[in-house]
Amino acid sequence: MRLTFAQYAKHRGVSRAMVSKWRRSGILDDALIEEKGRKHPLVDADKADAILDASLDPAYRKKTGKKPGKAKPAGKTKRPKASRKAGSGKQKPEPGGNGNGNGGGPTYTESRALVEQYKAEKLRLELEATKARYVPKDAVREEIFQAVRTCRDALLNLPARTAAILAAEADENEVSKILTAEIRTAVDDMIKRLNASR
Image 1 (cartoon, helix red, strand yellow):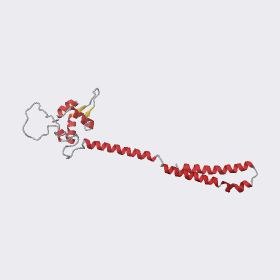
Image 2: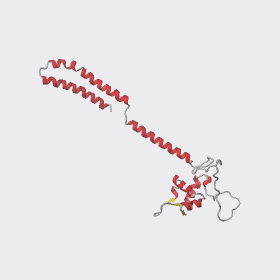
Image 3: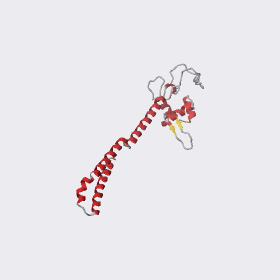
């Protein structure tokens, strides 16, 4: 039996807003029927009844499964309105759970808490992935310090390494080539060290 939301609300004995709330929560997804040309889907009443009776608080179950008792006269029956007076202390049970905590699905509050937990876990994973792309500042400073110190030591040892060679050279161009090669070696070693630390 295909019904509109308003018709199903009347069939179920609840407000249309409650049916819309069930739809938003996803509990009626398997009972909705999309039709071309219709803005809103229809409800498969039989399937929706089975889903709701199996998962909702007894307060929201269809009013046909009551205990046997005095037969009510045929005709329209008025559904008692919930009292809205301040201080009554009574609240309507949330869909998906039951008022006494026995069985049923999670309550609305529990579902919201679960969603927030998933969001927090996702943010934590994203933060860890971001951290993995960066290097601690102290580690970078240490690597630069070691590389520069090695280069400095090589340059300071340059006179001792090349003094005898340069003293034997009379050609100015040859002296220049020897010094350039030594300096280039020291600088290249520093660059290699820095690249290796990336």
